[in-house]
Length: 137
Picture (cartoon, one colour):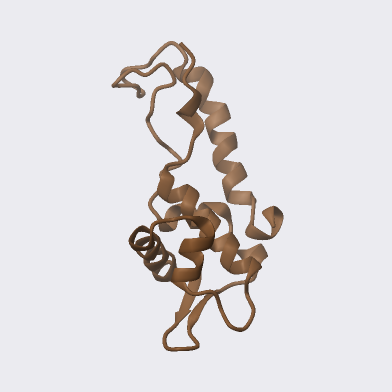
């Protein structure tokens, strides 16, 4: 049985990357606000604001309150790794999800693919660590 979603980031992580990329691409005056981002990216407003609060706390984006307020990217695009965004929303790159769908798959209870999956999983983690926002925009 082939599981298509075993490498898929969770919805929050997908949205977080899209939000930061959107803000970076629209970093002008006036700054994009949460309502605009929610509409343009088709992300429910309350969900979006929770994610954005996490990104602000992680010092990836900043917010300006008030009538002329909005959001901007806090660092240079080549200083923001995809891993930083994933860390901000608590996406673990070291998930213990089994490729074969077993409930337990770890060093003590290995599935038949466990050891073969270690190197590709480490490669994916390195890719997220070395890929910056600048690389994907």
